[in-house]
Amino acid sequence: MTHLTLLFEGEAICWDEETVLLAGNEPDKLDTLGKQGLLRPAGGGMILTEEGLAERDKLASEMGIPLKPMADTDPATALWRNRLNLLLEKAFLGRWGLKEFTMAERFPVVPYLKGEELFTEDNGRFRYLWPEHPSVKDLMDTFPFWGVSAREEPIPGERGLADWIERTGAPTGNLTVDLMLRSGYDFDHYRTTETTPEDRFRLQNTDRLFCLRVKDPDDLRAAVTALGQIELFMLGQRRIYIPGWADIDTEDQENWTMVLLVTDNDQQLNRLESGLKPSGMDLIEPSRPLFLLGTSIEALRGIKTPKETIYDWFCDEVRHIARPDVHINSAT
Image (tube, rainbow, N blue to C red; front, side, top):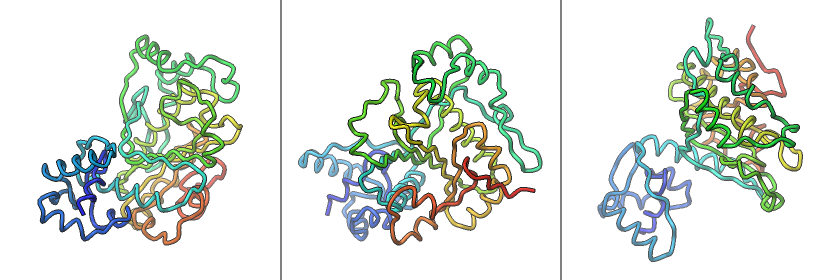
């Protein structure tokens, strides 16, 4: 029974009955381990006590199982991310492919812009200003090669970016993404394909899904800020880290960049979608190709039969707030 303690690792520091069941375990054991002093309530779920951590480490050592160090994360936040991870993992099968999830992954944003440097708002309509910012213009002038033609040019990489930051004094920062999915459709085909050494974030030859929690669907500025900072991160991928490979893979197949905004329930999702959709195409325009999507924990719970691939899930189960291949603005 104490083997359940092995679930507690890395960012997955908090579990409740639903998440334990989603992970294929018996949820009633949580209460039993709590009575044994191995778990205690926190954040709406259960976390390890000192005794529980010692028991977990002992079991892992005996069984030769490497475990990730426990993250210092707010339990309620960790539980929400854990739930999203497990529900999304069960939303589609992805046979013969790669599904790599990471929780609370931090991505560098350079230049790090926010507020009026990042976007403007007029009567509830948003437009990004970051492409006009002097630091962004300097970055694009310094690193002009992108797209397939950039494959013939040297890759600037981490060293090139560091030199540019030192020269310009551009502001730097990080964005924490609640859940990140790297998805590869044909894992066996691509597993021996060599990628560039500068692919620090392992985005070459993958579709990537950035999942962001939206706590307040009426706070559109928070969602617009996070989306804009992901776009700036992707600008760095397209110009500095993997120019030539950011959107097209080594087999000349398209790689999708998707941002998934996640609310707790469908009512919140409806408000978020109606608030952002009038600005949708303006918001993705500076970072095309980019898909802006929405779902809710409630909607993910409602998927009883998993889709076959991420593309099936994308087509059938998510809200399309904006997508580069179809003009879906509903604004007048």
